Image 1 (spheres, rainbow, N blue to C red):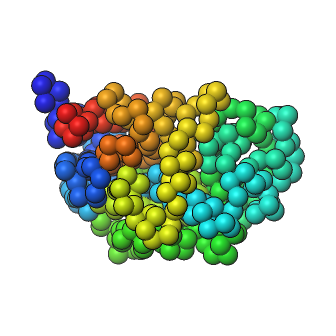
Image 2: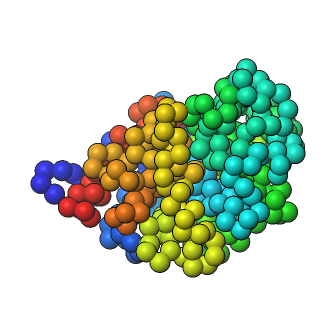
Amino acid sequence: MRGQATVKELIESAVDAGVVPGAVVAAGRWTAEPVLLHVAGDAQCHDGQGDDGQGHDGQGDDAARRPMTEGTVFDLASLTKIVATTPIVLHLVGAGEVGLDDPARRYLAAFSGPRGSGSGGRDEVTVRQLLTHTSGLPDTRNYHEHGRDAAEVRAAALAEPLVTAPGTICCYSDIGFIALGELAAAVAGCSLAELAQRVVCAPLGMARTRYLPPGEWAGQVAATEAAGGTAKVGMVHDENAAALGGVAGHAGLFGTAGDLARYAAAWVGKDSPLAAAGLLPPGLRAAALRCQTEGLGGRRGLGWGLRGDQWDGMGDGWPATGAGHTGFTGTSLSIDARSGLWAVLLTNAVHYGRGPAHSVVGLRKQVHAAVVSALLG
């Protein structure tokens, strides 16, 4: 690869350096069959006890150590936004049950009320603006800190005042996707978890992706951050999602690299099963990958982040027509419909803590560059 580190070298180096406990990388073109696949490190390194202050178990707890595998299930964090909420909402749009440019309150009565500090009101916020993070809502709020139950957290999120007028600026918002999840469930008349299975996972054969992973999966789930001295395994890491019962539009989904490969291929494949199964019309799929936010301080499609956006994790060399998303726990998924390229990088970075020493921002960009070098030349 002419002096550039390979994918294998990059992730093994990150594990050896203590940046992440482990990782699974898969990448390919057009189909879900990976051309590149590498696994390194551990799915769980410690139980949360005896931390040495550097994010490593001072006790060397071998009983809590589990190797990473190709089939390890990860807390996908904000990948939930594009693997569950986005395709569900777009499916409802394609089916004529939701209008992209309709006000969200038409489908979700609770999403209405005060203007906030912006010049526009919540009644004016459209479904498209929620998908593109241009609704005027703030990025997030720590609802979970107030001891609220799920109903109170949901009500607080849906009543959150705007901080800017709708359609005037890009601000990546968890709250907007909480609202989208609630909107989809209200329209469909069932839970978001049921919708994810019916609209996405079952049609695409994603048998190891779901909200609320069953207890028997515990030994196969990558541990995230320690809470109360015990590493979270199979419990959602995002605190607001946990307060909502583990099922939310912004976070809560668990899945494997293999399942994400199937999902990626559904977006880039020439004969997309998204269209073949009647889940998403081709024109709507193309619109989702086209910039909807020029001049608003970000480059967003419908749900997807695009090249040049503030949160672009795709790195040098990834095609300019690419789209992707990242998750706080150390996950990412990137695609390019023009070249058929896709890449999945799953790590459990927060298992070592949230400090900058365990940031995977640089690793993501390096891995993407290595994938491009290997698969596009």
